[in-house]
Image (tube, rainbow, N blue to C red; front, side, top):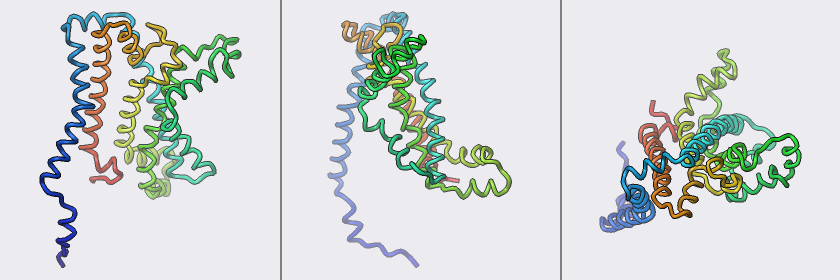
Length: 287
């Protein structure tokens, strides 16, 4: 029996052509103003004095140190949040336990706390006058104004990204497949590796991309705990600020262009995942 369509409902849901075109033009104009023009300005200013000037910027020891520190922090932070995100999503989606709601709240906490405030919290805990400061100083352990503090601050602000991508997907998938695998004799680890992990692989990669992008671009929390030590604790965003304040505009825009390029690569990978594996990311497998 063919479906009967309601012409009144159809007409109510369709807008005149001029309305749709106007909305599209408004959207494109807004994106051009707040996204495309700033990006174009960054790359234009970076290349204003030619490629030779870029070579001088990136040959600078402080710039090289900022790039390597940024990559190092991301390389440490992302795996930490990967392990935590998978474990937290697994626990929340597959089990019932006391404090489950509290765990979800803690995962969302970095979204509601200013990065500057989160950095200040670590200073109050691990700084020279902080709660653990005297003990750390007595044992010659340096956290604030060093790599560990930057990693801690970055890990905190990026903590929700992977977990929040996995939790809804794993809740929708339920536990039936894992229970079936364990009924057939698979251990918990084998069930996770052969059943759960393949089902969440694209959402997991999606969360890793978002986490990595935020880790490389974080400014507020890192600015508080780093101490702005040039050539030692400055990440790329902090180095951009220093170069700009020194009126080294070519250098500032060159480093900013590198950050923007990394962001565009991440965005491209994210868009590719959404296009190719959109159903899997939404929890509805194509196959």
